[in-house]
Amino acid sequence: MVSSDTARNVVGILGNIISFFLFLSPVPTFIQIWKKRAVEQYSATPYLATLVNCMVWVLYGLPMVHPNSLLVITINGTGTAIEILYLIIFIVYSDKKKRLKVVLAVLVEVIFVAVLALLVLTLAHTTKKRSMIVGFVCICFNIMMYASPLSIMKMVITTKSVEYMPFFLSLASLANGVAWSSYAFIRFDPFIFIPNGLGTLFALAQLALYAVFYKSTKRQIEARQGKAEVGLSEVVVNGNGNSKRTGPEPLNAFGSEINGA
Image (tube, rainbow, N blue to C red; front, side):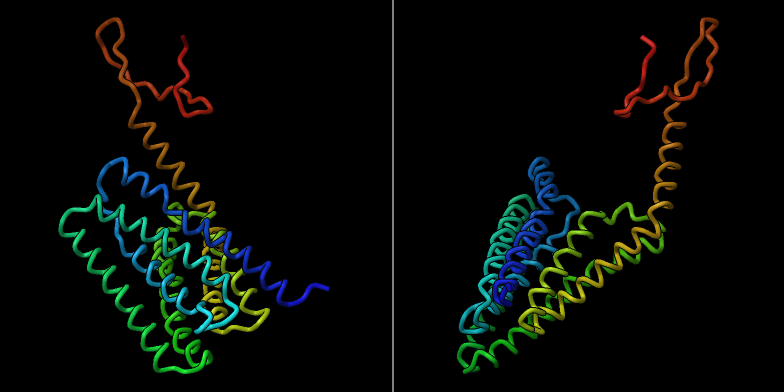
């Protein structure tokens, strides 16, 4: 029979893998920033929020705060490094005003976590008290992160389109929430269970919206493509110098026009 510790470690490792791929999901955005040498209208807020969230979870997982939480440290330590890399790229390709704001925000976050660590380690003298203090801070930051898709969900309901709510990202968020909720449930840890339980519910809600509005999204995209095709209709000049409007050429499997020659 598998022990609870073994099961918890297996689920935690699975949670690490899923979370790692979630941390890598913004890579296409930063490749685009790197190619254009500019951040354009992209915001640093999601990466700043994820950075401080990862840092407080690393603090929570330390042996002197919450023993036996190595897997919490590994994934959030990795997340911290990845977010720092994202923010460095963001700073490099930002204008002076935006660069200053991001640098100041990072400094504030680092100082906040350092002060929190100092106060917790010096004023709270048991791991139970330290876990409770840092755990409440972690819950607050995690809930704010998980609540961020609410604006996208509102847009989906308003537009009846899931075009800008990626299916696989929502699915991965669900898997991540289930994995870490299970990890917290095996040896009950309310500070991990509460935010990830809420994250699971948010992800389920996103997938439910996807199921409800999938067909209407397809209809909207098809209608938009139809208008685009009409707009691209060619004006062909015949031999008499008169012009006539023809419909678009048929498209092949790759979206290119099929020419007669």
